[in-house]
Length: 440
Image 1: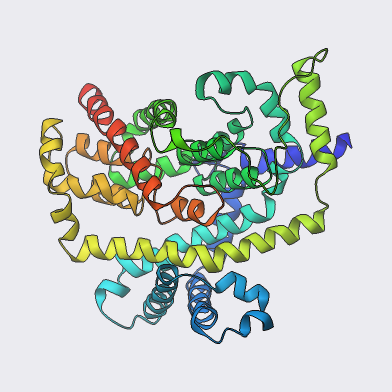
Image 2: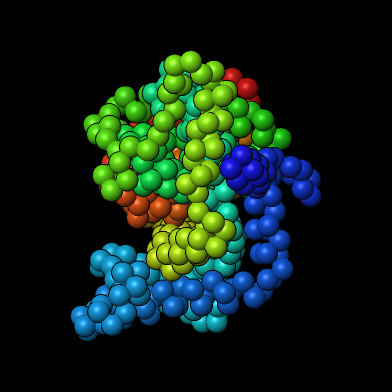
């Protein structure tokens, strides 16, 4: 049983948590695998992503508005594709726009490199690869005892600073060196299996699912401030910790119940039993968890089930939101008009080119990459730094993390997520401006 704890846990840590240098940048094995698969598929990736989006659109239409008796005939497909009107619209639009992009048929605002190709091919491709591998390998990190081991050792530190169980450190590590989407998936799985309460899962998903080191490098490059990467990363860590201390003490997070997910009940046991050292107790908890872990085939079966769910239900909606955000930004003045009230605030903070920067302050709610794109078109390094900083500190964005949360059993709705986004923005914006004025 010791081997069942140690071997999968070490493999999981190596895949998700160990930074290595690859082609001149630091990433993790999971990221290398995803990039390799994406590169090997080449132009074929466009056909893969389009096939998924089109299939999702067709089946969602069939099982959402088709004959009700199909629910009994195809119960698994029905549970997967039957959905409400908003999600149905997003999936159908995703199917239509992705096909138009693949065929390069239709107006430029749909098929251009800046809009359709970016959303439905480039970004979707790498996310499909990353989440796909992540779903298959995630149990190595969550089911074989490493969370129990680390959580027991770090319980007091996280409880004193953040009021969270020690195992939350794994969520932070998984995102800081891996991916925020993987960290959200870790949080969801831990909540739904009885290891986080409602409040803990809500706090962790909205405060600790930060962006990865490679993504911060990418953001700095796109924003045109690659030479200030270390300043940007330091600002992200500082502001992230501050937000994680402040926002859980304010509504809506402060009003979330501290209760466990009812179907699972309480499973966590991080308290050190009397007469045991912390290290011994940590090992015991890890081995106990490993004893309950599934075998390889069951692990893969669960992973494939999660993969299909995310690929065909979450991703089409997420990429449609990203596409619409890019289309509105590049081809209309809507965002400029809506964010005009922010211009005086940016002027008060002495942020140059405030009118051009204003859309980047709020558009991160829809997609976290767009603020960096806006920053790249601004000449002033202070303004570019602020927008790049927002893109890596706001954390709540509906093209990925927010949809994952909404589709889970974590008790946060649309209004709560928007409120948390605004709170994080209110905290981060003046601090980023202060850092920019002090160091740039």
